[in-house]
Image (tube, rainbow, N blue to C red):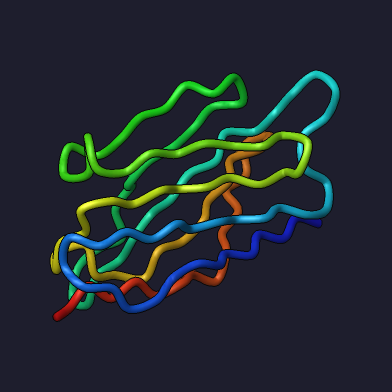
Length: 118
């Protein structure tokens, strides 16, 4: 069984920064396979959207709205991914969900709230 636990959300002023972490536990990866992980977000009244993802080899993809401001990284030994969020804007306010795709199955964390407001 896989478990994803997010941390690092909170209230920040516009222009500020936050770092999200997601720790995976359970049957995660193997000697031959490191799963793709990422972050989705869902703002009030909107659909959940992909923010960023990182492959097992470290290749990253970002939504256009966060390119140049957000950066994902991972520590495979710790089974943890991170997302550094800089120059935050009010429109970044959302619940951020950690996501992992492994062997054809999507796994989700419970989410962490990020609020960008003055």
